[in-house]
Length: 235
Image (cartoon, rainbow, N blue to C red; front, side):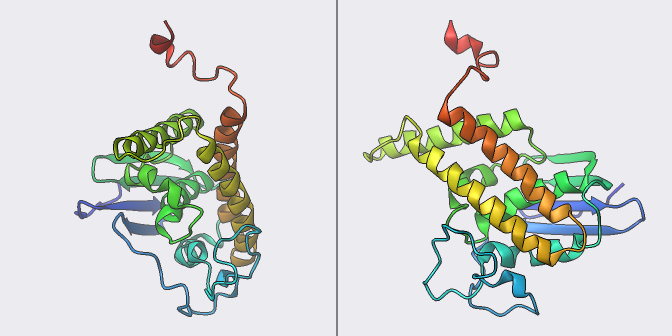
């Protein structure tokens, strides 16, 4: 069993235990600031902004040297570069509210971690996900992700309305954001192909893209997928 040390009230810890006895851990502060995007990390050409740059990158032509999301993934990519995506691991995640333990695949564990890292990396495309990340749910399912994405966005619109600002109750902005996230997921997958010997990182973004696609599909045309879970509201 992984020994979990005390953590601050504003961080999330991921502990990876591999069957060969190796362990790796990652701590992310929920108050973390974006990385210095002009700082030169150690020999990571794939983190340069123009390397497989997302076609819609808001940082293009701004003088930024490195992709902030890529900078944040340097250590996770290094730690898992030689491991296959289907490898089964023991994952422990400690959040300010709870501890989650699960046996899962490396790609699913990494997908969960990357979904937490992105919003706090400084990438403008992922910033919309920060409220969800502050209430992180490790290894969330497709249905959980869908409900959380819609719910968080609507809470945000309620708060805007309370402050006297325009509110997007039709969630057109969320639809556009998830279209942008899908472009980003594909771009980051291409970056990680150059960074890892194996496919754990690449496949993690594939899983994130599947979740983003599910949210996008509902926003494009709702077909009743949530009706049963919310039937009390429909009577």
